[in-house]
Length: 248
Ligand code: BJW
Ligand code: ZN
Image (tube, rainbow, N blue to C red; front, side, top):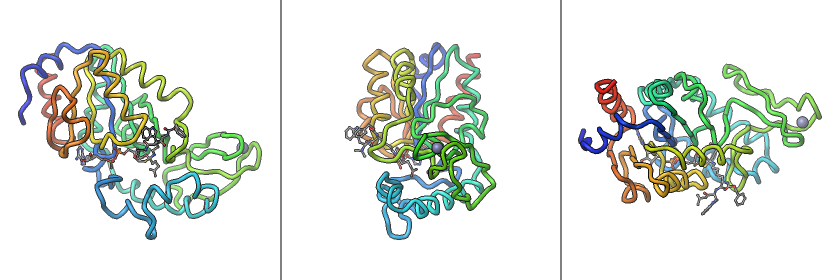
Protein backbone atom coordinates (compact mmCIF):
# COMPACT_ATOMS: atom_id res chain seq x y z
CA UNK A 1 0.00 0.00 0.00
CA UNK A 2 1.30 3.41 -0.98
CA UNK A 3 0.83 5.87 1.89
CA UNK A 4 2.53 9.23 1.46
CA UNK A 5 4.87 10.78 4.01
CA UNK A 6 2.39 13.64 4.20
CA UNK A 7 -0.45 11.35 5.30
CA UNK A 8 1.81 9.60 7.80
CA UNK A 9 2.63 13.01 9.30
CA UNK A 10 -1.03 14.10 9.30
CA UNK A 11 -2.08 10.86 10.95
CA UNK A 12 0.44 11.11 13.73
CA UNK A 13 -0.23 14.80 14.41
CA UNK A 14 -4.03 14.79 14.05
CA UNK A 15 -6.04 15.81 17.10
CA UNK A 16 -9.54 16.03 15.71
CA UNK A 17 -10.46 13.27 13.29
CA UNK A 18 -13.75 12.76 11.53
CA UNK A 19 -14.77 9.73 9.42
CA UNK A 20 -17.71 9.33 7.05
CA UNK A 21 -18.56 5.74 6.13
CA UNK A 22 -20.87 4.21 3.55
CA UNK A 23 -22.00 0.77 2.46
CA UNK A 24 -18.50 -0.19 1.22
CA UNK A 25 -17.21 -0.39 4.80
CA UNK A 26 -19.61 -3.29 5.40
CA UNK A 27 -19.01 -5.00 2.03
CA UNK A 28 -16.29 -7.23 3.46
CA UNK A 29 -18.77 -8.35 6.14
CA UNK A 30 -20.99 -9.66 3.35
CA UNK A 31 -23.49 -6.77 3.31
CA UNK A 32 -24.41 -5.86 -0.28
CA UNK A 33 -23.79 -2.25 -1.34
CA UNK A 34 -26.49 -0.18 -3.04
CA UNK A 35 -24.87 0.81 -6.27
CA UNK A 36 -22.44 -2.06 -6.65
CA UNK A 37 -25.15 -4.39 -7.94
CA UNK A 38 -25.71 -7.63 -6.06
CA UNK A 39 -28.76 -9.45 -4.79
CA UNK A 40 -30.16 -6.86 -2.38
CA UNK A 41 -30.11 -3.92 -4.81
CA UNK A 42 -33.31 -5.28 -6.32
CA UNK A 43 -36.22 -6.71 -4.29
CA UNK A 44 -38.95 -8.61 -6.15
CA UNK A 45 -38.05 -6.77 -9.35
CA UNK A 46 -38.12 -3.34 -7.70
CA UNK A 47 -34.93 -1.25 -7.55
CA UNK A 48 -34.03 -0.32 -3.96
CA UNK A 49 -34.98 3.34 -4.40
CA UNK A 50 -38.53 2.23 -5.24
CA UNK A 51 -39.00 -0.23 -2.37
CA UNK A 52 -37.06 2.02 0.09
CA UNK A 53 -39.30 5.00 -0.60
CA UNK A 54 -41.75 7.12 1.35
CA UNK A 55 -44.38 6.30 -1.29
CA UNK A 56 -44.03 2.57 -0.58
CA UNK A 57 -44.30 3.21 3.18
CA UNK A 58 -47.63 4.97 2.52
CA UNK A 59 -48.95 2.46 -0.02
CA UNK A 60 -47.56 -0.94 0.96
CA UNK A 61 -46.03 -0.92 4.42
CA UNK A 62 -46.15 -4.71 4.81
CA UNK A 63 -43.98 -5.10 1.67
CA UNK A 64 -41.51 -2.60 3.14
CA UNK A 65 -41.36 -4.66 6.36
CA UNK A 66 -40.78 -7.82 4.33
CA UNK A 67 -37.81 -6.14 2.56
CA UNK A 68 -36.29 -4.87 5.81
CA UNK A 69 -36.90 -8.21 7.59
CA UNK A 70 -35.07 -9.92 4.73
CA UNK A 71 -32.14 -7.54 5.22
CA UNK A 72 -32.16 -7.99 9.02
CA UNK A 73 -31.97 -11.71 8.34
CA UNK A 74 -28.90 -11.18 6.11
CA UNK A 75 -27.33 -8.94 8.76
CA UNK A 76 -27.88 -11.48 11.52
CA UNK A 77 -25.38 -13.70 9.68
CA UNK A 78 -22.81 -10.90 9.20
CA UNK A 79 -20.14 -9.78 11.65
CA UNK A 80 -18.09 -6.57 11.88
CA UNK A 81 -14.87 -6.68 9.84
CA UNK A 82 -11.41 -5.21 10.66
CA UNK A 83 -12.47 -1.78 9.31
CA UNK A 84 -15.34 -1.53 11.82
CA UNK A 85 -13.09 -2.76 14.63
CA UNK A 86 -10.31 -0.24 13.91
CA UNK A 87 -12.75 2.66 13.63
CA UNK A 88 -14.12 1.65 17.05
CA UNK A 89 -10.57 1.68 18.46
CA UNK A 90 -9.94 5.11 16.98
CA UNK A 91 -12.55 6.58 19.34
CA UNK A 92 -9.91 6.43 22.07
CA UNK A 93 -6.84 7.16 19.92
CA UNK A 94 -7.39 10.83 19.12
CA UNK A 95 -8.21 13.89 21.23
CA UNK A 96 -11.53 14.02 19.43
CA UNK A 97 -12.96 11.42 17.07
CA UNK A 98 -16.31 11.48 15.29
CA UNK A 99 -17.76 8.64 13.26
CA UNK A 100 -20.55 9.60 10.89
CA UNK A 101 -22.17 6.71 9.06
CA UNK A 102 -24.73 6.48 6.31
CA UNK A 103 -25.11 2.80 7.14
CA UNK A 104 -28.22 1.56 8.88
CA UNK A 105 -26.76 -1.91 9.50
CA UNK A 106 -25.60 -1.39 13.12
CA UNK A 107 -22.17 -2.99 12.44
CA UNK A 108 -20.21 0.00 13.81
CA UNK A 109 -22.02 -0.35 17.15
CA UNK A 110 -21.54 -4.13 17.11
CA UNK A 111 -17.78 -3.51 16.64
CA UNK A 112 -17.76 -1.27 19.73
CA UNK A 113 -18.24 2.27 18.39
CA UNK A 114 -20.03 4.04 21.23
CA UNK A 115 -21.39 7.08 19.53
CA UNK A 116 -21.71 6.86 15.75
CA UNK A 117 -23.85 9.58 14.16
CA UNK A 118 -26.23 7.44 12.09
CA UNK A 119 -27.45 10.03 9.59
CA UNK A 120 -29.71 7.57 7.73
CA UNK A 121 -31.18 5.93 10.84
CA UNK A 122 -31.03 2.31 11.98
CA UNK A 123 -32.51 -0.94 10.72
CA UNK A 124 -32.77 -2.00 14.37
CA UNK A 125 -35.38 0.63 15.27
CA UNK A 126 -38.95 1.19 14.23
CA UNK A 127 -40.80 4.52 14.32
CA UNK A 128 -44.46 5.43 14.59
CA UNK A 129 -45.71 7.09 11.40
CA UNK A 130 -48.11 9.23 13.50
CA UNK A 131 -46.24 10.40 16.61
CA UNK A 132 -42.61 9.45 15.70
CA UNK A 133 -42.09 7.41 18.90
CA UNK A 134 -39.14 5.08 18.24
CA UNK A 135 -38.82 1.48 19.45
CA UNK A 136 -35.67 -0.66 19.52
CA UNK A 137 -36.18 -4.03 17.85
CA UNK A 138 -34.66 -7.25 19.08
CA UNK A 139 -32.18 -8.19 16.34
CA UNK A 140 -33.24 -11.84 16.70
CA UNK A 141 -36.94 -11.15 16.08
CA UNK A 142 -37.41 -11.95 12.40
CA UNK A 143 -39.95 -11.57 10.97
CA UNK A 144 -40.83 -8.43 12.86
CA UNK A 145 -44.45 -8.38 14.07
CA UNK A 146 -45.93 -5.25 12.45
CA UNK A 147 -47.48 -4.17 15.76
CA UNK A 148 -48.90 -0.74 16.54
CA UNK A 149 -47.43 2.21 18.44
CA UNK A 150 -47.89 1.79 22.21
CA UNK A 151 -48.58 5.51 22.63
CA UNK A 152 -51.06 6.29 19.86
CA UNK A 153 -51.86 3.05 18.01
CA UNK A 154 -50.29 4.32 14.77
CA UNK A 155 -48.46 2.07 12.31
CA UNK A 156 -44.76 1.42 12.83
CA UNK A 157 -42.22 1.70 10.02
CA UNK A 158 -38.44 1.12 9.88
CA UNK A 159 -36.63 4.12 11.42
CA UNK A 160 -34.49 4.76 8.35
CA UNK A 161 -34.20 7.78 6.06
CA UNK A 162 -35.68 7.11 2.64
CA UNK A 163 -35.16 9.26 -0.45
CA UNK A 164 -36.82 12.66 -0.15
CA UNK A 165 -37.14 12.31 3.62
CA UNK A 166 -35.47 14.52 6.17
CA UNK A 167 -32.50 13.28 8.17
CA UNK A 168 -33.05 12.75 11.95
CA UNK A 169 -33.31 16.09 13.74
CA UNK A 170 -29.89 17.52 14.54
CA UNK A 171 -27.87 14.65 13.02
CA UNK A 172 -26.56 16.49 9.96
CA UNK A 173 -25.99 19.69 11.96
CA UNK A 174 -23.87 17.79 14.51
CA UNK A 175 -21.95 15.97 11.75
CA UNK A 176 -21.25 19.16 9.80
CA UNK A 177 -20.08 20.96 12.95
CA UNK A 178 -17.55 18.14 13.49
CA UNK A 179 -16.54 18.22 9.80
CA UNK A 180 -15.96 21.99 10.01
CA UNK A 181 -13.67 21.63 13.01
CA UNK A 182 -11.59 18.53 12.30
CA UNK A 183 -8.02 18.48 10.99
CA UNK A 184 -8.21 15.08 9.27
CA UNK A 185 -11.29 13.70 7.47
CA UNK A 186 -11.63 10.18 6.06
CA UNK A 187 -14.33 9.27 3.56
CA UNK A 188 -14.58 5.49 3.42
CA UNK A 189 -16.65 3.16 1.25
CA UNK A 190 -19.19 5.59 -0.13
CA UNK A 191 -20.06 6.48 -3.71
CA UNK A 192 -20.54 10.06 -2.41
CA UNK A 193 -23.65 10.44 -4.53
CA UNK A 194 -26.26 10.88 -1.82
CA UNK A 195 -26.81 14.28 -0.25
CA UNK A 196 -26.57 15.86 2.24
CA UNK A 197 -24.05 13.28 3.59
CA UNK A 198 -21.84 13.81 0.50
CA UNK A 199 -21.44 17.46 1.51
CA UNK A 200 -19.49 16.55 4.65
CA UNK A 201 -16.10 15.88 2.96
CA UNK A 202 -16.52 19.12 0.98
CA UNK A 203 -17.30 21.03 4.17
CA UNK A 204 -14.25 19.55 5.93
CA UNK A 205 -11.88 20.37 3.09
CA UNK A 206 -13.23 23.89 2.64
CA UNK A 207 -12.44 24.50 6.34
CA UNK A 208 -8.85 23.27 5.97
CA UNK A 209 -9.01 19.56 6.87
CA UNK A 210 -6.78 17.04 5.08
CA UNK A 211 -9.17 14.84 3.10
CA UNK A 212 -8.47 11.14 2.55
CA UNK A 213 -10.60 8.69 0.60
CA UNK A 214 -10.52 4.89 0.95
CA UNK A 215 -12.36 3.12 -1.87
CA UNK A 216 -11.46 0.53 -4.52
CA UNK A 217 -13.34 2.59 -7.14
CA UNK A 218 -13.13 6.23 -8.20
CA UNK A 219 -15.92 8.51 -6.98
CA UNK A 220 -16.81 12.13 -7.75
CA UNK A 221 -14.70 13.01 -4.69
CA UNK A 222 -11.51 11.21 -5.71
CA UNK A 223 -9.91 14.12 -7.54
CA UNK A 224 -10.93 16.54 -4.83
CA UNK A 225 -9.19 14.54 -2.06
CA UNK A 226 -5.71 15.30 -0.76
CA UNK A 227 -5.00 11.58 -0.80
CA UNK A 228 -6.92 8.73 -2.35
CA UNK A 229 -6.14 5.20 -1.16
CA UNK A 230 -7.43 2.75 -3.73
CA UNK A 231 -8.44 -0.50 -2.07
CA UNK A 232 -10.67 -2.20 0.45
CA UNK A 233 -11.33 -0.56 3.81
CA UNK A 234 -10.66 -3.83 5.67
CA UNK A 235 -7.19 -4.00 4.12
CA UNK A 236 -6.16 -0.33 4.14
CA UNK A 237 -7.31 0.63 7.64
CA UNK A 238 -5.14 -2.05 9.34
CA UNK A 239 -2.09 -0.57 7.52
CA UNK A 240 -2.97 2.95 8.69
CA UNK A 241 -3.53 1.63 12.21
CA UNK A 242 -0.06 0.09 12.27
CA UNK A 243 1.42 3.46 11.32
CA UNK A 244 -0.58 5.10 14.14
CA UNK A 245 0.61 2.53 16.69
CA UNK A 246 4.17 3.17 15.60
CA UNK A 247 3.74 6.84 16.53
CA UNK A 248 1.92 6.22 19.85
C1 BJW B 1 -15.72 -0.27 -0.83
C2 BJW B 1 -15.56 -1.60 -0.62
C3 BJW B 1 -14.61 -1.94 0.34
C4 BJW B 1 -17.04 -1.46 -2.11
N1 BJW B 1 -13.97 -0.99 0.95
N2 BJW B 1 -15.12 0.73 -0.26
C5 BJW B 1 -28.57 17.75 -3.80
C6 BJW B 1 -28.40 17.46 -5.14
C7 BJW B 1 -29.16 16.45 -5.72
C8 BJW B 1 -30.09 15.71 -4.99
C9 BJW B 1 -30.24 16.00 -3.67
C10 BJW B 1 -29.49 17.01 -3.08
N3 BJW B 1 -29.82 17.05 -1.79
C11 BJW B 1 -30.75 16.11 -1.53
C12 BJW B 1 -31.03 15.45 -2.66
C13 BJW B 1 -32.01 14.33 -2.80
C14 BJW B 1 -31.50 13.00 -2.32
C15 BJW B 1 -30.20 12.65 -3.04
O1 BJW B 1 -29.10 12.80 -2.57
N4 BJW B 1 -30.31 12.09 -4.23
C16 BJW B 1 -29.14 11.70 -5.02
C17 BJW B 1 -29.20 10.20 -5.32
C18 BJW B 1 -29.03 12.55 -6.22
N5 BJW B 1 -31.29 13.03 -0.87
C19 BJW B 1 -32.29 12.80 -0.03
O2 BJW B 1 -33.41 12.57 -0.41
C20 BJW B 1 -31.96 12.85 1.46
N6 BJW B 1 -32.87 13.68 2.13
C21 BJW B 1 -32.81 15.01 2.08
O3 BJW B 1 -31.95 15.59 1.44
O4 BJW B 1 -33.76 15.64 2.86
C22 BJW B 1 -33.97 17.03 2.66
C23 BJW B 1 -34.97 17.11 1.58
C24 BJW B 1 -36.20 16.58 1.79
C25 BJW B 1 -37.16 16.69 0.78
C26 BJW B 1 -36.80 17.27 -0.43
C27 BJW B 1 -35.52 17.79 -0.62
C28 BJW B 1 -34.59 17.71 0.39
C29 BJW B 1 -32.14 11.48 2.10
C30 BJW B 1 -31.20 10.47 1.56
C31 BJW B 1 -31.51 9.10 2.21
C32 BJW B 1 -30.74 7.99 1.57
N7 BJW B 1 -31.31 6.74 1.93
C33 BJW B 1 -30.66 5.51 1.51
C34 BJW B 1 -31.61 4.31 1.74
C35 BJW B 1 -31.78 3.96 3.24
C36 BJW B 1 -32.80 2.92 3.41
C37 BJW B 1 -32.34 1.56 2.91
O5 BJW B 1 -31.26 1.10 3.32
O6 BJW B 1 -33.06 0.95 2.12
O7 BJW B 1 -29.41 5.35 2.18
S1 BJW B 1 -30.19 5.51 -0.20
C38 BJW B 1 -28.72 4.61 0.00
O8 BJW B 1 -27.63 5.44 -0.46
C39 BJW B 1 -28.54 4.42 1.52
C40 BJW B 1 -27.09 4.80 1.69
O9 BJW B 1 -26.85 5.21 3.03
C41 BJW B 1 -26.88 5.89 0.67
C42 BJW B 1 -25.45 6.11 0.29
O10 BJW B 1 -24.93 4.98 -0.36
P1 BJW B 1 -23.41 4.55 -0.12
O11 BJW B 1 -23.23 4.22 1.33
O12 BJW B 1 -22.53 5.56 -0.68
O13 BJW B 1 -23.34 3.15 -0.90
P2 BJW B 1 -23.08 2.88 -2.46
O14 BJW B 1 -23.56 1.51 -2.73
O15 BJW B 1 -23.62 3.97 -3.30
O16 BJW B 1 -21.50 2.93 -2.62
C43 BJW B 1 -20.66 1.94 -2.03
C44 BJW B 1 -19.22 2.36 -2.24
O17 BJW B 1 -18.38 1.47 -1.54
C45 BJW B 1 -18.77 2.32 -3.72
O18 BJW B 1 -18.09 3.54 -4.03
C46 BJW B 1 -17.78 1.15 -3.76
O19 BJW B 1 -16.71 1.33 -4.69
C47 BJW B 1 -17.27 1.16 -2.36
N8 BJW B 1 -16.77 -0.12 -1.87
N9 BJW B 1 -16.45 -2.28 -1.51
C48 BJW B 1 -14.22 0.33 0.66
N10 BJW B 1 -14.39 -3.24 0.58
ZN1 ZN C 1 -47.43 6.76 17.87
